[in-house]
Length: 395
Ligand SMILES: Cc1ncc(COP(=O)(O)O)c(C=O)c1O
Image (cartoon, rainbow, N blue to C red; front, side, top):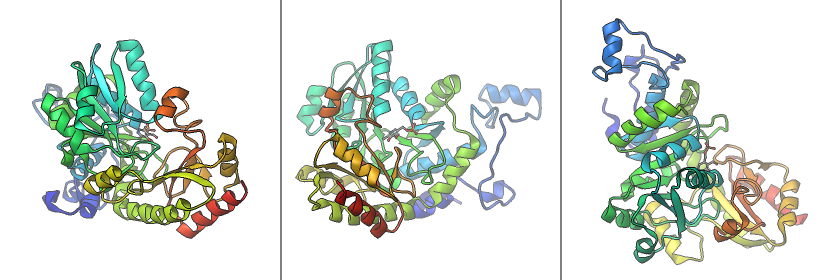
């Protein structure tokens, strides 16, 4: 069965798996095995030499993990994929594969706090430079790219301010210089955005989030050209480690089956809550893709995102303490970092996910002390709204 022509919802359930090759098992089996036996010494030799396909040892590949990787490659419309033990293992594998001492990484205006931490580490230890760019025009990109830029690294929507980056614009500027464009697609999942179809080269996911969807796995995924994925698999991943466990891959395969229905519900709930929050007198600013005062963002959204997503950021009128007081009054909504789970979660980026970012850089990223990020869950939206309402009344 060639799955390539099915629609997203069908691929999310079937692609990369042929039950006939696994005793007819409807669900992909869990190969919870660290190593694989060879039929002979010669076969072992051939596998190590790359002369024969087949599994050797689970750090170098595992059948359950391979199904997940093939499915993610299909969903992101890339050539191949590699799964990791965390989103950060995926980010670090990609950035170290694309850079060496003296190189430069051009980043979107904001990045996840630990990605910021990794950029600092690469700079301090290996003299790999980076800077941040709003990337709003070709001229700005031309100005911010340097002769030693070997990689462009983007989050869109940017975490946590929801500002969008025009993927086609960046890909166009990068192509002229042969620089790969890497997109952290965690906030969208491939259901809402497929950066490779907009000319970008490599996609990263914290699969911990929407891909898993149930808050019980930490994992990462990289999708990209086959030669790049092979190189990362045979170098960074093989020798540094950071592989996903077969059980976590199995849970992600289960999560992926419901990704489209979950995403639709996350988005529907978020849209309704945006309507409520937008005009609330105690909310200073609301950040949500497509609902921006910046007309350019709305145009970018139409171009590259299927729907605005399930994340809403907003700043509360008052101080950091007011924002914290509001959080403490919530009853249904849980105070926790992470996103994309069935449960609605709220976090305070300045003291949580982006606490490692120095205050000056945080301000440049638009992360004020009163900013909160809400990951809208799958509960009845009225219950989420009523919880927000009663907590807002108390501040
Ligand atoms: C946008 C983004 N990228 C990467 C990561 C890192 O992923 P993980 O926590 O799975 O290592 C996160 C985690 O919150 C994230 O939000």
